[in-house]
Length: 186
Image (tube, rainbow, N blue to C red; front, side, top):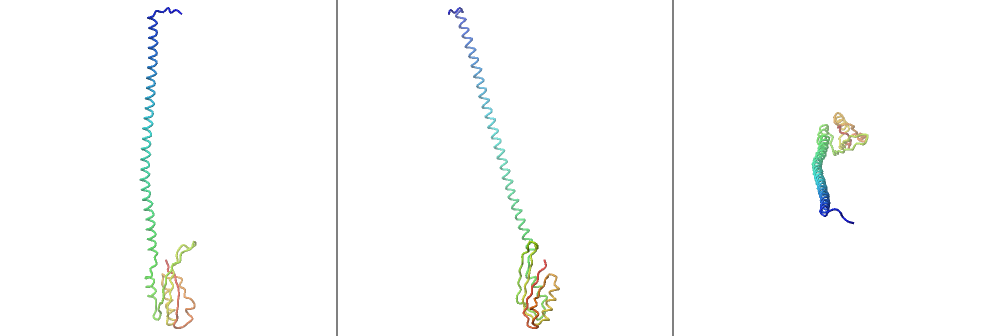
């Protein structure tokens, strides 16, 4: 084939093609750089977001730890308060044997002597929630009249209830070994 286009024109056409090719390659290169930088920017934004989220999570965990420390402190205060209430109720309901002995001795007539005094507390059942405080007493009386007077004096005492003198106490008229029991009113 014969080429009728002059050489100079052919060279101009080749140069124009090269220029177009350079422009297309330049645009592709710039577009690639732009895409690369946009990718880097999105990675940077993503990493910064993750770091911020991590900081927020750390702050929340610190707040939770502080609250749990406060929560632990509040639990400890609550348990201490319950212990104090139990101690207070123990001291308010405590049985003081010295007070009972004073009341017993105050009511003893002449001729009656105490041998043994014992205290016991019976726990309440499901139906009866209060504890029973019992006192068991044994002693000696010269005669039945002194023992009867002792019983009457104890029945007048307002802090004693359910006074039980068994019938065996009344068999002998003199030199009586007796025993009885009563409850302390709460």
